[in-house]
Image (cartoon, rainbow, N blue to C red; front, side, top):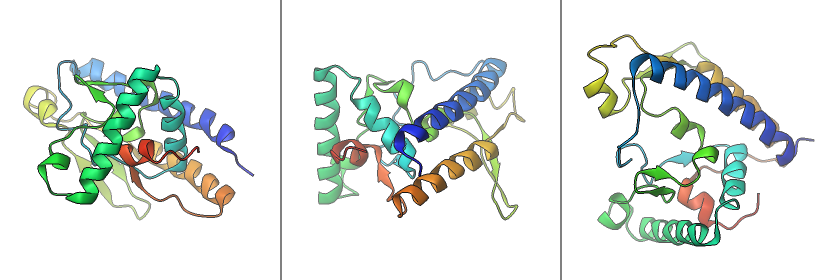
Length: 192
């Protein structure tokens, strides 16, 4: 049986591989998120689909000092309430991630896969052989794509490894993980 304690080292190893691949392409192109406010990437709808990432993020929350943790939880609760009240309303749609303070992630070390890989153009091959791709964030497209039109991060192996980790979690729990936004994950109070 797989426990959360067994999933975390596997997730950390996967994150390290992602970070290395991302850093290599960022260095090659000179791309950086520095100075970006995160409005385009750090949206309220960033959703976690895996138990391991939810577990890791919740554990990361416990590492924050009490004031920052309280601020994150307060923002998370407000976002969840605003989404329930009016998911298309400005109170929800105009928010950024509950972890984003002045353009910086409060749990940067614990950030999920989607956040780790944001910005740089990418592709991945689905199990059925179909290839999907993205041109990257608006900033990359504006500042780097003209000089580096062929740069693409292959996310396929990362997605496959994450799927393997999640399959083990599903087997251990006996049920699938319910997708949750970052705010829902943090606000839920569920100890994973």
